[in-house]
Length: 100
Image (tube, rainbow, N blue to C red; front, side):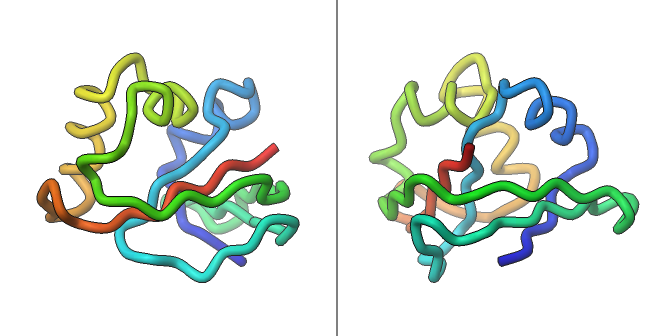
């Protein structure tokens, strides 16, 4: 599976500060599947990894721990970042994809 990601997040992935990513909606992702991140700024930048966990939940069920796995300091910071990309409410479904 290939996912677009903001170029600024590649550093967090490479430094293992970001170990998961959230996507609006229920995504068909499976543990063990190869995952390729491509930069939204430059398609030549790519990072390949493996899915090690998948959590489908309402936004209201996302935890501080989930936010920290994403590389954010807090759930509040994660919420602000996601609102810059998606329109959603507390009942919107997200897929949280953990990778190694």
